[in-house]
Length: 65
Image (tube, rainbow, N blue to C red; front, side, top):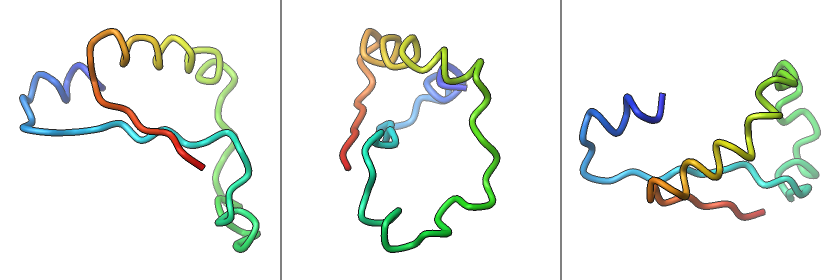
């Protein structure tokens, strides 16, 4: 998906990662993401590789609580 986006030659884009820490939004809105399905284990295992690839190809990425 990322390579397809890059191939479309956008002028600007940034990746925003979810923070692993508990956020105020999750505390104030208990039902936040309540109906979402759990992330598949296969995808969880790939996340560190995805972070590394994004960094190596020079895509701007942000992560903050």
